[in-house]
Image (cartoon, rainbow over all chains, first blue to last red; front, side, top):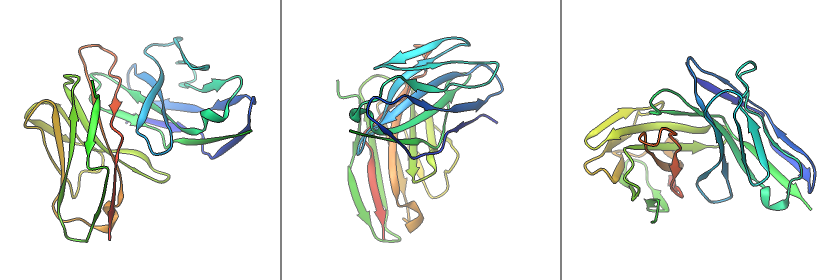
Length: 112
Length: 114
């Protein structure tokens, strides 16, 4: 069945450091891929998405490229800020979109 | 446009008590979902609905029931609460008409069962 595996945390970085959070997926068809972010005490918010191979999603300085050959959708940011501290979830949706499959989440803490 | 709202925000129950969590969305979305979030487990789907009057089981449906009598509302019920149901519950909705299936989440309900 479909599944998402993402890098275990927690991750602690200094401000302005580079970030990569790995995400790989297993799917039977051609899924859409998403990164969601959850700030403390809040629900999940969509950060970026890609709907087909080689698409790059980007938002707020974050980027992720849909790589079909490696079944990956790694999240990257060149220079993190304290305000980026949150939990990040990789997810996929396939077919009619009835169900999403979420990774376990990666907690990021950015220290000044 | 409030998006997805959940009621209540917090609740403490004793084992065996019952309660209903309410989710409402004002985006005219067809799909609605209930998830639970536990440390180290990510989000797990409890039940979902693809339209008014229809519901389906997700990954962890045992101990929960749902109803979708109106398109904008999705209720999650616990008939006899157990400590294992202590969790944060999130409701979400999405629309297949856009073709993107992005899910919009509510702020969550923190439930403690003692």
